[in-house]
Length: 470
Image 1 (cartoon, rainbow, N blue to C red):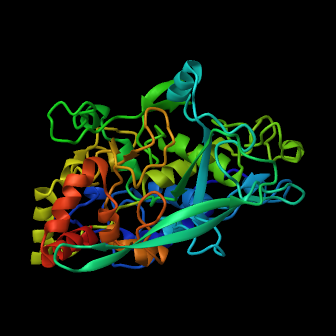
Image 2: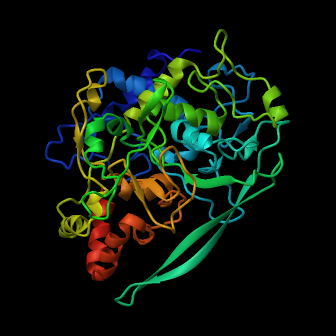
């Protein structure tokens, strides 16, 4: 069934109350896309405030495909079938809880529903290294690019993730202390044999979805203006662009999305998530994630369309991409509080803003008018930085090495618990508070972390209050 605007026009009309008044007087974290939203579970699920009425209808169409589950083919629900054969979840919303972040399992009995384990093998020959840098990580020969812990009937899942937490205590010079936790992920119940000897693993929780269209529209030159891969200015901060394979353009392009900036566009990011997470193939990625060792997986019927050798209709992928481009960023709260103002100054003074860059302006784009020429505040440079030994996953991804991660945007930081039910920061969700996340910073961020540690407790609280205001 082809989605149409008329199908969901009632939903859009119900959402009209979200249309925003002029917000020139407000802190416009997301430019004119910013929403005035009180803290609740829907804080990350609103359309850009400046979307037109008809565009909000399209937003609702995309939302329906993002939110609702997919089913096994063949099915009478032909617009939503093709789930699996191997998968991690049956819908986008299951991982991006309320369009927000996922989290790591709480204990060994908890499922990894909003976290996955990336798989690959280390590139060792010159040919493999060149291929990895151009096309991305080399698939683990049996299990592919990620562990899929669920499957349809008569197909064995790949394995299960067991989580153990190691706890430690960090003590400040002023005598106060805080508990930190570090995960140990163990993969059990492997159904297709052992991993390759040179297999690499990386845990990734689902990131929040807000503001992605704005990030996509930043001119490449503006991002590269903050790059200093060889630290030519000697400030200890590099900033390296990741160049990744753009399937649509069949060339390397600047990476912007994902924990290591491994995706160039939202369309490709969405197509990859449909394939890897839900088992839905698309024009961009037409083959199921079944290796030659997974015979049952290869032989199961798919949900391909008539005349199209893939499962996801192109207009459905377009609708979901439109939706993910236009999820609004909530405005900054409490911006006039003295503690928030102090925290923002400290954020700059101790060097956090060197990587968490506060402001960009999008390019002019008449085809995406709500996102065009917007000045906004993501607090990210979208570049790779060495984050030190404690956060290293030792897994390469295009040009990113095993210690490098993309600076994550900080907008929406104060809404995560309301949206997702808990706070899980950093790539593997180990940090349960902003303070814990800061204390895990190392590598290029070590100097800023040490300055944070030396601050009086009241100033540390002010800096955190600023981050919670975003």
